[in-house]
Image (cartoon, rainbow, N blue to C red; front, side, top):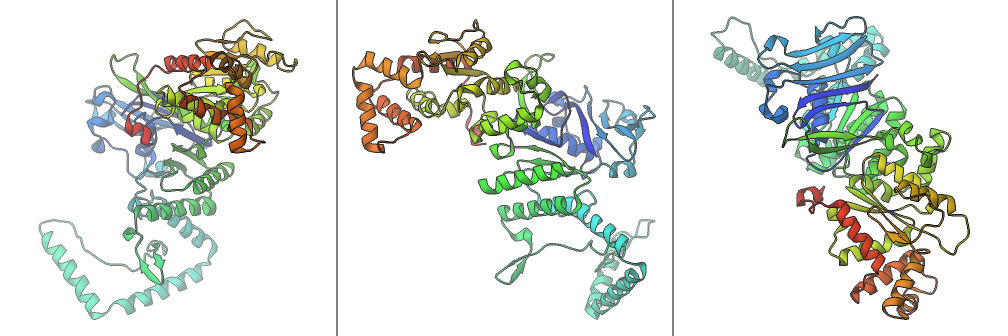
Length: 552
């Protein structure tokens, strides 16, 4: 059972959003773009609290105005109750029309939601605070509460009734032993005091204490920490330790019960070092392969991959076309069908397309999804040198949100271009014209010149345009030629110095980085590189990101 479709209207920063989550959906984008609001909307409808207007504040409505109403709805497929839509709707000024309802596949007339129906569609929500009390509460909606319910259901289905009765009697006997005189007097005093304060009520109310619940023997279970033989409550531990306990519960629940719930997780990477992040990302993948569904927000490249591009949802805030001066949350996605429809990405089958991306891409390609624009270059040589020249030109690429990404070979450039373009990222393309080389690059040159809007050309002339730069020959030849025009012999001198410092077998990327640093020390930026970086600056055309946005 999984969420097939999500529709959100007028909830917080979301004016209108309609999307189809997969087994894994990674919500990425800058801070304050609305990622948390998407997960919060699902939690409002399906989470631990009953969806009610009583808990809504003006800030929960788009534009902080209740007049436009609000709606959060989901479709599950398949589902055990034949429910078509499960939704909450707030109608301003009409309390009778406000509330949680559902329609069925056979009846489109909305029916008020019941506990029985809602319980069939549980959501496990891990917020960024990793609230220990929330996740380990005994509510049936908490992650711990659901685990306890599963344990109790398994106990009742596996243990014979006569043995269950024996266990119950043994616990009753233990409970009687615990009822000392002091225990009895304490319970009596508290119960009488409570009753005295409620003497004016017509209801019969009392306080009692149970050491176990006869309906669920596991209900009183609670984890404890043992350090050097000393026991203590996890509530006394630091936030990092509590986060690890919550994630341990998450892992155990996933592995033992396979989760009949949908998981919504904010920033799973919190408090985790890189290796642990990758381990948790792998667990997410295993859970999805076993049938679970996880929607999560993240700022970590460990939780996204180019080969699974259709799991990525880029969340951004942009001007609302219908409300002048207001911002709203939007989502950008790329389907496999859309990417495969481009000639540059056509590989025959979706499986081959993903295989090609898996081999062509690494962490730097995943990190680019978190930026605002991409400089896409042929190889690691340009990738090593360009940021150094950019820094000298007072262009902080990280602050601008610009990623320099190597295709690790010209043949991968067309596919990667379509990948980032399909997800809505502005791209500045840098490639060689390979003048003087053989004919192996001709077809790729035709594709690349066509992609950037030029007349397809097998041997394009070197140039710097608004959206691309074509280097004469390759990076090294272009750099050598331009430096000769500035200071004759400079390239050869720097090359010799690099080999004396770094070794005679120094690789091209390290050589390029060394030369770039030496050149900026001399105040030299090669003309082509300076011109293309100016074009990138114009393309981004945005102020430096604020500090809060840079931190996460």
